[in-house]
Structure formats: C-alpha cells, structure tokens
Image (cartoon, rainbow over the protein chains, first blue to last red):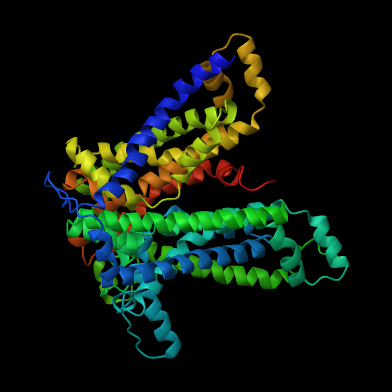
Length: 293
Length: 281
C-alpha cells in the first residue's frame, strides 16, 4: 500500500507542483534577485547594485505617498465592505418578502469586472452630468460641479466607495451563510430572558459569526492587496499621485519608466508587507480560535 | 412574544423592508445608469442628462458594438484564454487537492500551506520575472503567457477548495475500490470526481469570472490590438469613442454578459459551495 501511495502521490502531485514552482515560486525568488540589479527590462546585461534600490526607496517621495495611500486603501477597503455586508446580512436574515431579489441586487456588482465597475463609477463622478453631482445639485438647489476624481483630496476616497460598492455583496453572502447556521431557539430563549435585539446581536450573533468574519476579512485583505485594476481605470494613480498605491507605483516604475530593478525592489517590499499582514492576521486568528473553539 | 414572522434580532420587519428597499435602489443606480445610457443616442445623452428615462428605445449602440470587428477579436481572445485556463487550473487543483486530502505524507501539510499561501501575495511581486521569462521564450504578445499564468495562479484556490471537498468524501469508498482492483486514477476519475460536481461548479464559476474579468496580465503580456482581451479592449475603445457614453455602456454590458450568465447558471451551487469548508453548517 505504501509503495502504491508513493507512486500515485508522485504522479498526481508532479504536474501542479511543477506548474506552481516554475510560474509562481521561481519568479518570486527572481524578484528578490532583480531587486539588487539595475536591469532595464530589455538589455541582456545588468549590474549588481547591492542595496542601492532599497536605499532609493527610503528617499523616494512617491514611494512614501504610495505607502500612505496603500494603508488608507487597505483599512477602508477592508472595513467598509465587511461592515456593510454584515449589516445587510443581518437585515436580510429577516423573513421578508423579496429577500431573494434583495440578495441578487446586492450581489450583482461582484459579478462585474473591476474595469467595468471603474467605468461605471467614472460616469457617476463625472463633473458635468454625473449622477453624484446631479443628486447634490437637486438637494442644494443650485448647480454643483465637483470633479471627484480630478481633485487630490477626493480621488482615493471616490475609488474606495466604488470598490466597497462592488465588494459588499461578497461579504454579505458569506455572512448570510454563517447566519443560517445559528440556532434560532437560542435567540428565542434569550428574547424571553429579556435581551434586547442589540444585545442579542452583540453577545450571541456576532461571536457565533466569528468563522464567517475570519473568511470575510481574509478575502478582503487578499482582494485589497491586489487592488490595482480599479485604480488604474479610474485615476491611474493621479491626480498628482494622490491615489497612487504601492502596486501602482511598482507598475509605473517597472513598465512605464523601465526601471525593472527598482520596480522589483518595490515588489519585494510589497511582498514583505503582504506577508507581515497575513502573518499577523493568522496569529490573531489562532487566539480567536482558542477563545471560540 | 411571537416573533415567528420577524427575524430573531430585527423587531420591526416593516422598517427593515423599507431600509432594504432604499439600499437596493442605491445599489442598483449605477448599473441602471449604464443600462439607460446604452439605449440612448449620443445626442440624447448630450442634450438631456444621462440619467433620465429615454423617450424611445435606441438599439444603435448595441449594433455598433456587436458589429465592430475589433470587439469580435477581443471576445475570441478572451474565450481562448478563459476556457483553457479555467479547465487547466481546476484540473491541477483536483490532482493536488486529492493527494493532500487522501494520501497525506510527511511534510504534506507544510507543502499544502506553501501552495495555499500563493493565494495571498499580490501578483505585482512576480510581474517582472514573468515578463522576462516569457520575453526570453518569445511569447510576449501572444495569448500563451496569460493562459499559463492564470493556470498557475489558480492552483492555490483550486487546491484548497478541492482538498476541503475531498475530505468530506468517506475514505472507505476509495479503499474498497482499491481493494477491488481499481487504480488510483480510476478512483479519482470514476468515483470521486462524479461526486464532486458541486465543488467543480463553484470553481468553474470562480475561475471563469476571475480570468474573464482580469486586466493586469493581458495588460502586461500583450501589446498589439489583435491580441488584446475584452477588458483591455474596453479601455482601448474608450479612446475611440471618447464621448460616446452610450456605446461604452453597451460594450460594458456585452462584456459582462458571459460572467453574469455563468453565475446565474451555477448560482445554485455557488453560494453553498463558496462557504463550503470555510463556515461550518
């Protein structure tokens, strides 16, 4: 049996592991290698420059800006869709007419691509006739004309709103699945004991939803770290780099300025940050699991 | 206290219903805006505002989009990337997931974690080396790099979901089949896979949507217009039709249709399967 197992393990595992190693693991290590060179992307010779690329990062004003923006982006892009999705799931757990239609409505945006979501919201933020300015104009009763995506103060937040609109449906669905697993009798009993609806949510429902929250936040972290497409479409990192993120900065340095060595150094930093966040997250997770079993 | 008709923590079902209606309208507005713009003439949009209900149905934008040969090429390219990459990534995930679930070995948990960790890191990290690799192979500006990278990057999620699913299938089933002389391959393809249709449906939906909608890899690996996929095409055509919002709206709808259809088709499995193995219950 053991010989049988060893044979089949090798045969079955070889294709996926080979594919994964050659096109994911190996490039990952290559990025580290290139980050110590001044490779420009085309010429076959390049020099080793030691830590020069990493030294450059510490004085790169645009990198600092991108790092700050990435932090804002990640915190907001994790909290907003998660909170909104939870609220929607709690509201939808009520047996109301049309619940299925509501669920589909809130889920629809997640089926659209980042490119299309970006395009839709570019129209909404359009200064002259965009939906947002039209609505504000109607409320304040005069012509309101604000270029949401062209002002450094609002560009990043405007994209975050669009992103949240798209991602909320995903967390809602996961929370809804978690809610169906909660025992109704427990909630009824607590109601008889005089617990208010808020107390029931706070002390019974939320703790029991912990496994769902774990999944929702993990997905939000992964998705927000990859958040590149929608920024590329809506602002391109502008105006004046006000919505630049590390991913965008890395792309610009590597594929616009052809500083692939420097781009690789940014990629390495991005990777280390990503791994640190994920690592921290899973450490917290173990603590939570110890408490809630 | 009878709360059979309202939820366990929402005391006012009518208020909840009204709040949900309001939120639903807000959520639908952006999509409805695109729908409305796609059935208006450019003149209509320029004259009135984009968001008014059109006086007459104008299908010209759709005929323009569907009649544009560039759009045909974008669609064909996207299909040529999405179908093989979806199938290949799922196949690879099935193989790895099966071993991790049914034939664990010393160090298999660590290996599994390394593969699944691939899900977490930003694709930008491997951009430069992959560009160099495919450039050296002479594959830049073909569809091959996109297919290959999507197949490889799909392995973590496919392996994770398939392993979790295979773990729910009783191991005795495999053992008795092997005792009766079936090979491992026969067990996998004739016993285990037919039972795995719900999991496969979930992965098909996820991978198809993900690859169809992707923007980054075709942006990096293709350059000429006849090698671009639909998501890049939308951005390219935007320049061509820079003021024709109606055409762009129609194009966005047409480009979203395949993923919407796949989702509707697999919806039944999807929500169940998405949470499978992740949320108990």
